[in-house]
Amino acid sequence: MEKLFISVVMTTYNWPAALKAALRGLAAQTVQNFEVIVADDGSKDDTRILVENLAQQFPISLTHVWQEDLGFRASRARNLAILKARGNYLVFIDGDCIARPDFIARHQALASSQRFVAGNRLLLNQDLSRQALEQQLPLHTWSFGEWFRQYRQGNCNRLLPLLRLPLGPLRYALPKRWQGAKGCNLGVWKTDLAAINGWEEKFQGWGYEDSDLVQRLIQLGIQGTLGHCALGVIHLWHSENDRSRERGNWQMWQNHAQQKRIQAEIGLKEHNSDNSV
Image 1 (cartoon, rainbow, N blue to C red):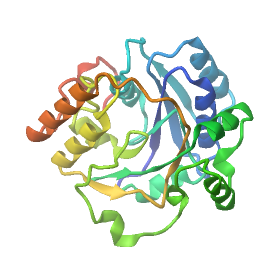
Image 2: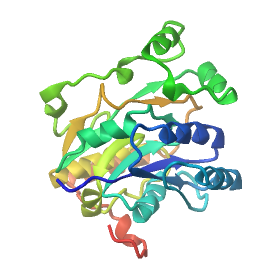
Image 3: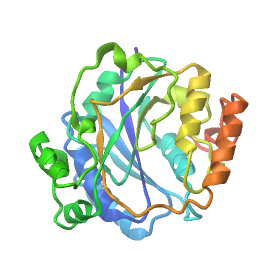
């Protein structure tokens, strides 16, 4: 297998406080042979200023890629970040998700040829999320004991994502499972993303762009690795996104699945860039 260099693609939109907490988690990783690209889906200038200021003291390369705010276009934002990425392996995470210190090391350990890795997440409630951001609590450093206390108090939904278990062959038992794979914790080889033409930019508004990407990877012959009990992230609470385009996105995803589509109709190839993918 080729030598691994990870580009973390972190999506964000107009929530610099959450983004700062998420970047703080990435800055504290036990390994530092990776880069971070913030895929900004049209945030105001305060997000750009935050990233530029943090980049001056960030322990690894931190880049900001911005697009005009024309509604929820996470797929396009991610594709623009992929085109800027220097890594041969992409880890996708959202700007309201906080990685624990071994997150990158675990992704490195699970990355293997012809496979994608789907992780999971722990969801915080509104009160703990607000407190964490207001007090800048270092959630990425909390022990399992502290999280157990929070769980007992009803401040988070489960503890499974925090566990670190080997699982062995179980990680590879469901190679064609797309269910549960989310763009907030997903590892994919850059060459595989290029082969499917990246994220489908026809998905606009909330819903199913990640299911579509994973299904197209599976159609290509890329198999899934279960990232549970290895690299779960901490997901801050936020109000529900506008889901007015959910039905249309669901139908498009179903059509792609029935057609056994592999390549995105509008994706990486449709951008003019000097970067090769």
